Every structure is written in C-alpha cells, then in structure tokens.
Image (cartoon, rainbow over all chains, first blue to last red; front, side, top):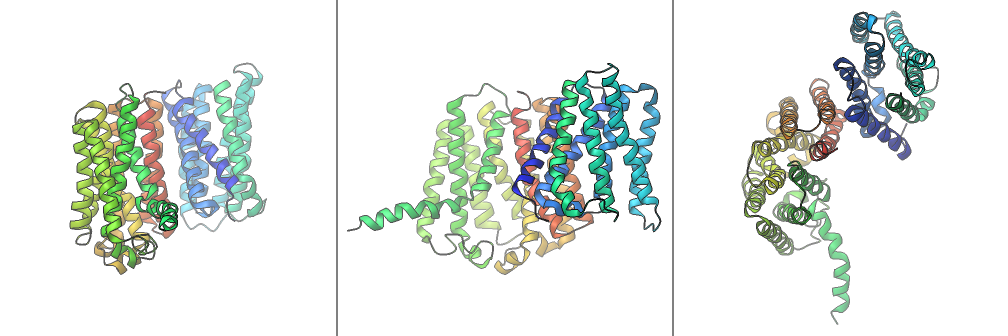
Length: 201
Length: 293
C-alpha cells in the first residue's frame, strides 16, 4: 500500500517530536532513564525516517517485531526506574531477558506458538506498565494529572504494537490496509501523548 | 530583428543553466559551509555570513558546471544523466565552459575578497574537484572519490576558517566527517547505477572490487564519519541533549549500513543513500544550533 503525503507528514511530525524529546524533554532525569528514553524515542525517530524513505514496505521486514518491542520495553524500564525504585533490578532483568527472548524466538526456526507467546507476554507486560503506572501515579496525586497522558500513550502503543505484531505473526485483527491507514495517525497521537505527559506531568 | 530570439533565450537559458549546478548537492554542500561557520558560535556577522553563502554557492556551482562541461561525453552514455543540458547538446560546449569559469571566478574572487584564508580553502575545494578529481583521476581510478571527498570537505572547512580565522582541530574533524560521509553517498549511488557507470567506462568500487568490498567500505567509512562528527560535536561543546540526538541519528546510519552488508538488497542500499543525506543535513543543523538552544 502506497504512503500518502499526509501519512509522510504525520510520520515526520512524529519524528520531530521524538527528536525534541531526546534533545530537550528528558534532560533533568537520572542516567538510566535518560538512556532508556533515548533508546525508545530514538527507535521511534529512526523507524519514522525509514518509514518516510521506504514507505509502508519498511513494515514488511522481519525485524519489525523485534524493533517494535524495544520501544515499550525501554519506555517502561525508564518509568519503573524513576517511580518504582524497589523493582528496578527486577524490571531491568525482565527488560533484558524479555528482549533477548524475543530476538531468539524470532531468529530461530521455531514451528510452535512460543514466538507469539513470548512477544505477546513481553509487549503485554511492558505496555501495561506504561499504561497503568502513570495513570495510578496521576490519580493518587504522586504526579501531576497531565502525567496520565503517558498512560494514554502507553495504551496507544500497546494497541498499535499488538496489532502490528499479530499482523506480522499471521494472526491479524485488522487487515493490513486498515492498519496501515491508521498507523501514522496512531504513531503521532502516541508520541504527542508521551511528550506532553513527560513535559507537563 | 534579433530581439525575439534574445528574449526567448532569456526565458529558456535559466531553465537550462539551473540543472548544471545540481541544486540539491550544491544546497547540501552549502549547508555544510554555513554549519562550519556557525559551529564556531562566535557572534554572527551578517555581512560575513551573506558573503560566505554567496561566494560558496558560486564556487560550488562553478565547479559543478565545469564538471558537467568536462564529463558531458560520459553523461551522454548514462541513462541517469543523458538528459542533462550539456550532455544532451542543449547547451554548447564552450558556453558551458565559459559559464563555469565565470561563476567559479566570481565565487573564488568573492571568497578571497571576504578573507584571504577563507578564499584559499574555497580555491582548494575547486582545485581538488576540477583538476584532481574530474580532469585527472575520475576516468582512471575508482579511488578518485577520495579526492572528491576532500573537495566536498572544503566548504565546511572554509566556513570554519572564516569564523575562527585559522585552521583548528574542529575544522579538520568536520572536514574528515564529510570526507568519510561522501563514500556512503557516492558508493551507494555507484551500486545503484552500476550498469550506467560500466556503460560509460567509469571505474567504480563495485566494478573494480565487487559489491562485498564496496559495502564494507561504506560501513567502515560511515563509522568513521559518525565518530568524526561526534568528536567535533563534543569539542564544539554542543549540549548533551543534542549529542544524544546526534548519537541516535548516527546509530541509525550505522545500523542501516550494517544491514546493507549483512542483508544486501536494492532497498537497503536506497535507504542508506537517502538516510545518509538526511543524517548529514541533520548533523549540520545540530552542530550549528546545538550550543545556542
């Protein structure tokens, strides 16, 4: 499916917002959250540029499943490191092992359901973390109300990620065409929610 | 009696002259010159900046026109370039030569008038491009691209020299960054248009050493370009956030060049070519603005 000019503009805006977040939006944080958020928004930025260059064909690559796992994993790692100090080591181990498991199960010629199960579990848990943690923190007053926007971004990335992964693993919920139609808008909305949530939260 | 043809020529000539300067390539090189000037973060003198922009634009355009003049026989043999005005015979040989000389002299003359050291670097860029690259080596050796790279690095060095008044380590690093970036640009191009270059008899890395060596060279030179830009960025003192962004963009470039070695395809090659141009432009903006914002 061909990418329209509007699609490219939406992806470009996503990339610019991600670049802003890397350069300015995460300046006053700790070292590990800065690294984690830089990786997350960096993957978003580079992936956006490749989408603009190659069009939706870029999503046909088998590495998309792996790449799309990096964003929620590193975002959730940054959040846990900042707001759940007691679980830092545990979540760091989960993020590293989860990523390794996704890479291995996507690289080996496995015929069973393990690859889908692994990617669903890793995406699901990291997506839930990004969705729930900011919402709960905003609701009980431990963070500004606007921080809940990060949770909204988490919900969007969860939906987008799972739809993309299910499409890539041959079990689509939405058709390829429908998914590609909403994908640029979904990316931009998600990034706007993240950037606004971090800035005003 | 001759008024109508003259008026018609006035309308058509600019349309024929414009493609002679390869506006995108000239624009990218000009942006490196401006970035070199702004990288010094000295108070910006608008007359100097305007003079730099004009003289560099003319010098780069002049050397490109002279290149088109000399290579029109090669361009005529290549599908990609055979419609260029000089190659297609829409402009006479001596006309293109005269135009190239006038524009080059205006560019270098303006540069010398602005600052002699700056003018010397601009002249060096023109000399390496026309004499060493185009006239001497392009038809003889695929390694001519090294000299094309040296020439391509002169605008950023010129901008830096104009701003700081001398040759410094940052200027050298910025020049090296362009020198090492240019193979990423030109070698991906020579892979894509391999048949064209073979038809014209121009020695290229793919035709001389094969695709594997060419792709490895691209990957290595990409690493070196990213390191040189990063080092220059640190020495310039751009803010940590902008360094992070630079590192992210460089990582993307490295990953794509690595992918083009391990999983070679036309698509990977095309992505690397386009991304490399974007990376260079973005790097120039970051080096220029990274200490100001």
